[in-house]
Image 1 (cartoon, one colour):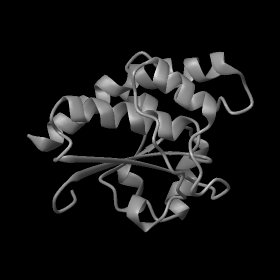
Image 2: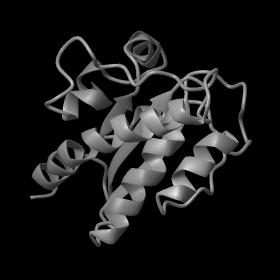
Image 3: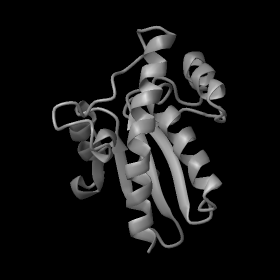
Image 4: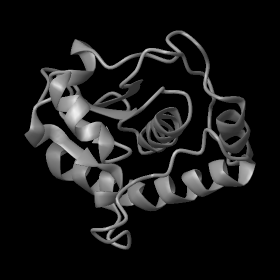
Amino acid sequence: MSDLLLHVTFVCTGNICRSPMAEKMFAHQIAERGLDTAVRVSSAGTAGWHIGKGADERTNRVLRAHGYPTDHFAAQFGDEHATADLVVALARNHIRLLQDLGAPAERIRMLRSFDPRSGAVALDVDDPYYGDLDDFEESFTVIAAALPGLHAWVDERLS
């Protein structure tokens, strides 16, 4: 674990759809629980196409509709993320890329592995980028279902 904070980082491909959505949702929930001084939440993309840009507008629309913040600047996965206590991949194709980028295999988990209803064959959060607003809502629903399990993981680490 990090010296001061438990660090959880979410990773997708471009860091403008799935991972910022998960980051904003989880960070907001962590703050509501009064744990924001103990848990750092971040996100990144495996690719650098959108570095410095905000989240996709459809991501922001869905987050706002559910009462979550939308401030975000896309980042590419780097050393700061590789040293996180938990690197949360949004799709299976990210796992090998994350290992190649320096994330230790034992610190990488699929987000949906925290949702007992997802089953072993449905671990990806589908990329909504080429879809419509309904696809972004579906991503929100899938992410939301996994977050209680992630909170339990955090609680276990902090106890």
